[in-house]
Image (cartoon, rainbow, N blue to C red; front, side):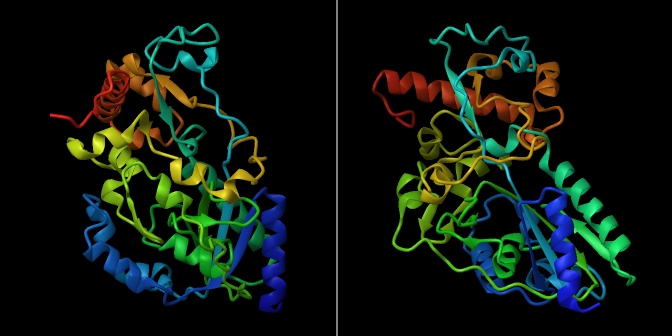
Amino acid sequence: MTPAVKAIRVKRIARELGFDRLRIVRAGPVRNARYYRDWLAAGYAGSMRYLHRNTDCRADSSHILPGARSIICAALSYRRATEKDRLPSRVAARTAGGTAGVGMPPAVPTGRVAQYVRGPDYHLVLRQRLGVLVDHMRAEIDEPFDARVCVDTAPLLERELAAAAGVGWIGKNTLVIDPALGSFLFLGEVVSTLELAPDEPATDHCGTCTRCLDACPTRALVAPYQMDASRCISYLTIEHRGEIPADLRDGIGEWVYGCDVCQDVCPFNAKAPPAHDAEIVREYIPSRLELPQLARLTPGDYKRLVRGTAAGRATRAMWQRNAEIALRNGAERSAGTPSNAT
């Protein structure tokens, strides 16, 4: 069986399993790996020290698996059809025994939650589905091979690999953008010793657009294709364990977990269809949560809130910290005072 025929079979299996995109790149040195080292050297990783580990593996994807020859890059859209600005009653019980729902008083201040974390934990969903992909590959390809499934936690430059494989290009907001699906994409990989025919790299279609740079509330996008993660709202609300710098609190606005601003303003997302995968779009956490409840989150409330999702990446204390900042931002903006005022 030729590498091209094997690749065709793998892609057919992926479509049957519901993947939105699946492309292939050769294992080996990663293009633009130098960019990653420069990014680390500039201090843009903030306190995420784990990103400084295994830089050799990140620069050469063949180090992930002995004898690796191909990397299968898969993508699933998680773009939701609509943003709900209320708490559905069936979800409200997950937080602080709340009574918010259809009849929630409009005066109750709420905080926003990024789309990616509102459904089931994508690590588990993608890992399970990629594992099934490998099982089907073993059944259909009469050739022994080793494979390693990777979802977010392996030392891979997965966005660079996805772009090299043709899943999409890395946009000015530093996210992978598919021209039809946009950037609300979960990425996962299968590193394999199979020789599979590679796909062509994606072409950049950002053009002269700078909407993402112009819209970023904390100016984390310091230049096109340059993200200072230490200023990013997603980093500040999810990864940063300590106090959030005073000069960045106002920019956080009403976000309590993550941020979608640079994706919301992207023209490719404006025309992208909503995700079709029923498992991915299940609603575990609503788009908005009551801030007073979050600020006094108990251990039991926290467990109910994050159960089955990736939201446990932020500790209970961090959720409370984020809620308090959002509350202060709302109150001080109502009073006409910037929240970083002294």
